[in-house]
Image 1 (cartoon, rainbow, N blue to C red):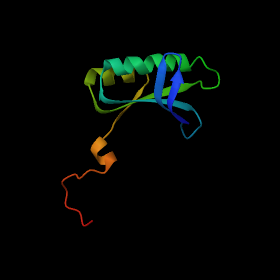
Image 2: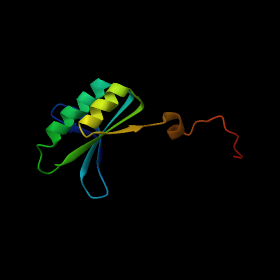
Image 3: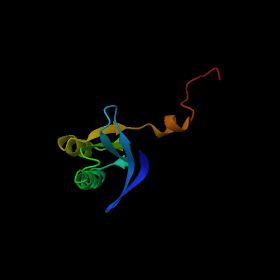
Image 4: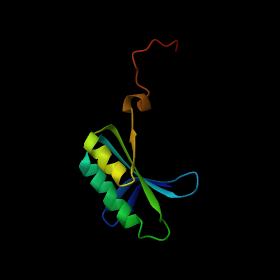
Length: 99
């Protein structure tokens, strides 16, 4: 739906809709730690008060997610996604390629 979706407490990195049309807030970090999960939790609590958005689920995405952060996120019903930034940028992986 939108990048940098502004809330009263700051911007959510991405606000999207899933295949069923439900709202999904995505918070993206380089390193996923507990502070990032807490940040996304605050956004979700606020966004779930908006009847036009609710219910809003969360995705915590990072290049690396610390075990404690993953445990906290999953306990709160937040999905975790590990991103490979180099692959997303199309950087060489060291594998031989024809082109």
